[in-house]
Amino acid sequence: YNMRDLSKVFQGMQMVGVPIDDSSKLARLWSHETLRVFHDRLVSDDDRAWYQRMLKDMVNKHLGLKFDNVFEPPEGSDLKRGDIALLR
Image: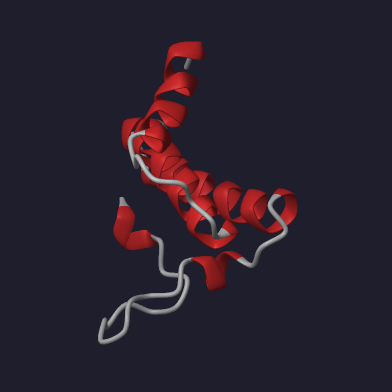
């Protein structure tokens, strides 16, 4: 990975085009972009599982939010709470 990859995360976040006024929405957007840029390149299930654990820890520790609350599944969905495994 290099600085260009990191810039892709922030470019993706800027493409929203409107201000994000909710910290949970911002954390969700940031997480989505990091998954898109970094997670999608991982080839082994072990590496993808490690990335998912690391992402969850970073949201909890550095953003001061509960990962499971940030990634609450949509109403009417049969996804489980905090189920990020479906994103790979």
